[in-house]
Image (cartoon, rainbow, N blue to C red; front, side, top):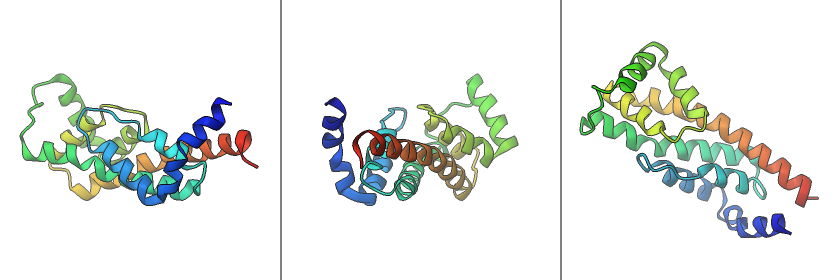
Length: 158
C-alpha cells in the first residue's frame, strides 16, 4: 500500500504540530527564487491535524517567509526596473495593490519572490504586502488542507 506508506512517512509533520507547519512554511518561502514545496507540508499535516488551523499556520508562515523578497526590493540591492515584466507588474501593483498581491499569492507561483521584490522597490507599506500575501496563501492553504484531509480521511481514515 503506497498510500499508507506515504502517510507514515509524512506523519512526522503531524507530530511537529502547527508550530512545525508554520516554521516549515516560513523556511520554504524565505528562499529567494528557489521554490520549495510548502504545499506538501500543508496537505500531509492535514492528515493528522485540524485543516483550518493547518491552513492558518501555513498561511502565516508562508506570508512571513515572503518578507525576504520584499526586503531585497526595498534595499535596492536588486535592480529589475529595466525589465519589461517588472514594468508591467509594477503598473498592475500600483493599480490593484493588495488585490494583485493576493491573487498572485493564491496561484501556484514559483516566481512570487519577484512580486515581493517589486512591492519592496515600490515602497508599498509592509503591512499591506503581508496582508495581501497572507490572504492569498491562506485561501490556497485552506483548499489544500481540506483537500488533503478529505483524501486521507476517505482512503486511510475512519
